[in-house]
Image (cartoon, rainbow, N blue to C red):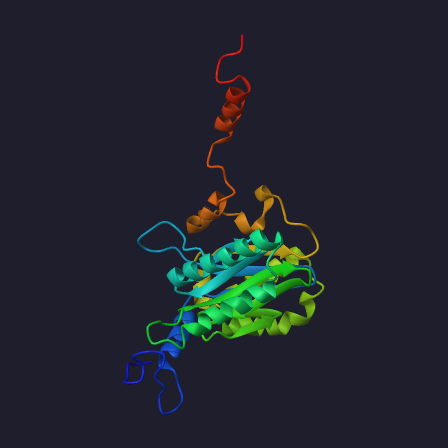
Length: 270
């Protein structure tokens, strides 16, 4: 990849019919940490490889919750992923406000694909440098979608993206037939084995790998907040999900004090 006269913006075609800025965005995905998504009959699982930075002690999380029934893992630029994730959260919130129901996963990723497509056709925009695996469930069961900067949206049984993800895809293809009958724990083991395969033999011996797995089940109602897999292991920049418009912003003790004060008319009871 190198600079040339045809990569100034996404509206300039090369003589070979290529859009170089879109290809650069795809290269950013290939250089990101590997992430894996797979689904069975009842579950969809996301696993992502997280590395600690040399300058900080915190992990750069690669799995982001979107709604009660949708989560996404990323490979590429985390800053771009936060913008995309916020868009998806807004779409889910607006749909729930209008219809009092969960946004169908297929329509959600289709809208996301349309949003990504606009950035490849305007000279004043650049493509999002992030690839996503979206896991969710609805009335049709669990789903795994691959969404790339080219605005291609693919419905997958299993997929891996990111750096050295070809070995992970090879593992998934070799074991794909068994995923349909796997339970939750078995799917998680397959996801971890696939991500581990993307490290290579040398890295696997010398590195400590931190894994974050998200799972959603298609048959049961949404899990309680304290057991919701989409909110486990902390959220870093995604903690804003707990402070949306539905939150009162008042601690529980203060709420009980307010109720007591209101019932006594603001004076101590005699």
